[in-house]
Structure formats: C-alpha cells, structure tokens
Image 1 (cartoon, protein in one colour):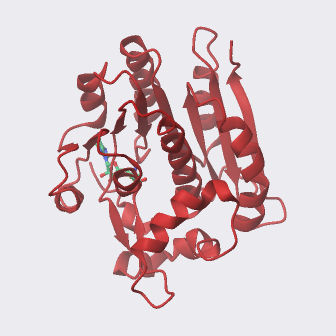
Image 2 (cartoon, protein in one colour):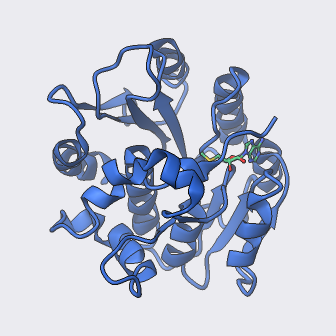
Length: 282
Ligand SMILES: C[S@@+](CC[C@H](N)C(=O)[O-])C[C@H]1O[C@@H](n2cnc3c(N)ncnc32)[C@H](O)[C@@H]1O
C-alpha cells in the first residue's frame, strides 16, 4: 500500500528540521576532498510545487519554510536556504517550489560524490528520475529502500550518509527502521545514519529511543522539534532525527540553531526542542 504522498507535506516544519540536519551532515562530509556516498532510502519525488492541488488542501509549507526562507537566518542554515532561493529565483519573491532530500543532495554533493536513491511510488518515481536525467553520479531504483540499502553496503568510498525517511503509515515501519540501521551498521560501522521520525504517538518515539540507546551502538544523537505540545491524539505535533555516527560538530551546530528554529516555527507558546545523546561519544 503506497497511499502516502509527500506533495501534501513538502516544506512543512518537519521538512525544515530534516533538511537542515541533512544539509549540515553533507556540508561536514565536504570538509575532506575524498569522495563520499549519499544514500536516500525513501527519496520521494525530489521537488514539489507549493501551489499544487495537494498543497492547496494543507498549506503546510506556510508554517514551515515560508516562515524562514527570506529572513536573516543563522549562517549554518545558509547552504540549505541558498538552494531554495536559487530554485525560486524566477518567481517574483514568491515561494513556488520546494526541494526534496534528493534535490538538496544533488546540489550539495560534488563531482566526485555518488548518490543512490530508491523510491517505490509509481507517480513519484518517474518525477524523481526526470530530475536526474543527465546526472552520472546518481543511481535511482524503483525498489524497496531497505533492500536497496542492504545492497549498497559497504560502499566503496567508506564515507558518507544514509537518510532513512519512511512514511510510517504502517506500524512495522518503526521496527523496519531499527532493523535496517542495525544491519547497516554491521556492514558499515562508520557510516552516518540519519533517521527521521514523526512525533504523533509517544509510544513510537519511546520505541525508537529505547532501540537506539543500546550500549553497543556508536555515538547516537537525538534532535527533536515540537511545534505544538504533544497530545497523542491529533496528528503530528513535532518531528525528530536520530543520527548514528553524527559529524563531530553536529551537536554544537544544533545547540546553536534549535532555539532559533523553535521560535521561528512554533505554533504554540509550549513549543520546545530536545537535543541529547542516546549513546554518548566514546
Ligand atoms: C516522507 S516521503 C520522502 C520524502 C523525502 N525523503 C524528502 O525529504 O524529500 C516517503 C517516501 O517513501 C516512499 N516509500 C514508501 N515505502 C517505500 C519503500 N518500501 N521503499 C522506498 N520508498 C518507499 C513513498 O512513496 C514516499 O515518497
């Protein structure tokens, strides 16, 4: 069952958090000339029209990227926002399009880097493919993201990141994520694995926290931004990222950014963030 469409949600507060973290990890991989790999297990369509009929129904980007793309922002957000500004250069100061994680990676990766993307949806897959037509760095497959991840590891580059961003429509996707990362670490112990999750039911977040706090794991950081108070009832009140093997500066960067992001994206005086080690650096 593939009913989830990211076009209803593109550019919302959760995308802002996820793509901020993704951009910071890619920026830190670029500090060395040596090539790296970017693996996106659930890639989506790659780029979204913010005036589509899907988006007209939710308008979620208005409480997300719309709130910050033209503001004076902390410097660490600049590479991410520069891509959004370039994409909307011809739209008279209006936000027309929003890049998904594959398009952000396409812009942030260098000639020597490699991208490996998987997407299953029959409508989103060809849209993703068309964005990368001339891009020899990129391999795109219409396969299950976790199978594609297994096939990709260990990468020849030995450095890089994996973004795991499933729709979480099915209960088993939480345990699929845990299994995918644990298997992945056996094949590639030094890889950075960035897992996105929604804050909807606290039991699902606690499950991930428990599984990613296991002592045998490498350093693991949790980053969460709640724009509304958690209530276990009405949809997504926030979102988070769990990053296994984070770049060494990521915690400090998020410590600097999260107060600003929380104020900018809040939908309630009770908006708050969380930043903590689930497993401390050795
Ligand atoms: C949250 S969206 C991805 C958004 C994208 N990562 C971004 O940030 O722009 C999740 C995507 O996963 C796709 N999907 C669902 N199950 C999948 C699977 N088993 N393997 C690969 N893709 C899948 C859905 O069609 C959907 O496009």
